[in-house]
Length: 155
Length: 155
DNA sequence: ATTGAAATGTAGGAAAC
DNA sequence: GTTTCCTACATTTCAAT
Image 1 (cartoon, rainbow over the protein chains, first blue to last red):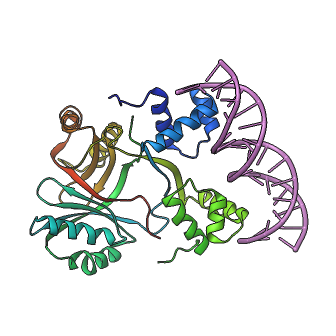
Image 2 (image 1 turned 90 degrees about the vertical axis):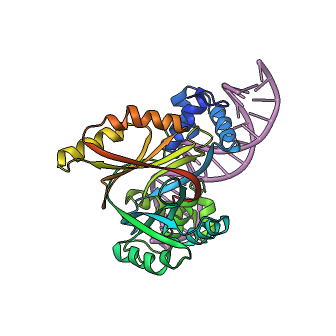
Image 3 (image 1 turned 120 degrees about the vertical axis):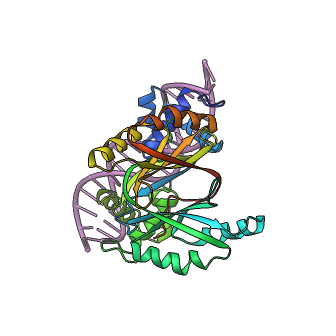
């Protein structure tokens, strides 16, 4: 795969920053055998052009009481633009919802829900998700173990 | 929810860094009305204690040619420890696999696959995923639109 | 677009409270 | 655990190439 605007140096920088954005420009410059100013300018452009969306801290979810991850597949009873939009807006407001994707296939949306435990999920399901209008079915699956979970796209 | 070791200042710091880890200690100190040294010490401890796992750059996946996200549900034909472990190891090696979770319910694993397009997914499916031993079924669903996608846990 | 060097700002550590 | 001070290091800008 080749990306139009990005050369090898850009790709190397993105590779490094996806893994560890606390690297200093000096460290990256050393690694890539370029000057600090070059790295600085490259990163500035990568941010400006939108390749780098944000720099974030990733937390240990178990330590902050988000021990349970559920994937919930939601089927709606109609697919008018209005119903879809309303569902998306409402479900996005719940803090338990980390992700909401509209999907192809036998259901409409997949949600990733993060809660402390099954009691908290139950509460979310009964008192939040299931109260939304136009839901036909919700099928939930729970994470038993996390084999791989990366945010860095191989590029 | 209360976390044992963390006070309000820690939580506020984590909240800020989850959203934007490029904030300087000075900026955080101003926001929380604390000294820079206090913030520095707090963050040092939050890293040391493992609350903050890593600082990463999040890229715009469409710009780096990862336009298609699939969730693939995999069912294996036996559930011996060895089969599970082998599947996990093999599937984790594929660069297209961003996430692999073992799940409760009617299938064994859910994978999040990132590729450039449907052709690339097809290639992954035929030449990589489907070649792994002990797979009974794979059901794939594709992301039509991304309504919400956050990495910051509300705390 | 890349560089080295100058100027500014921030991080990291020590000492005192 | 927090603050103040100090030094080292990092970022940012700029003139030159």
